[in-house]
Image 1: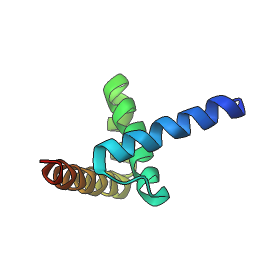
Image 2 (image 1 turned 90 degrees about the horizontal axis):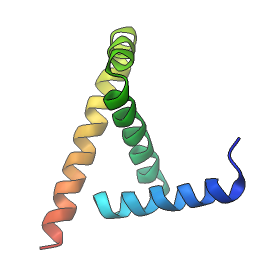
Image 3 (image 1 turned 180 degrees about the vertical axis):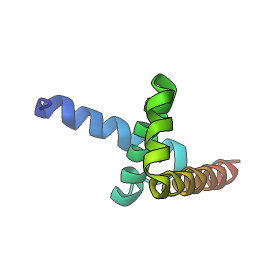
Image 4 (image 1 turned 60 degrees about the vertical axis):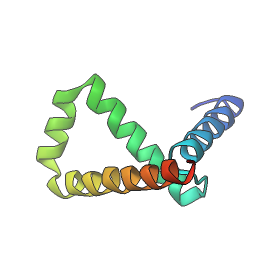
Length: 83
């Protein structure tokens, strides 16, 4: 279990990341970013594990692909609104 101070600080970091990435810090959006960050991190550090997971859960793999695409679109909209 994380200590409450660290947990709170990490939540703040994740919220700020979501705000900078997609322009929203709504709790639902932050949860999407959390899943995206977790999956991306594991995919980079342990590709065979993610490959196994994708093969074991093809429906989850598709859901992650949709989530990544959704975040990409939100990021593009946010970036274009900053210009």
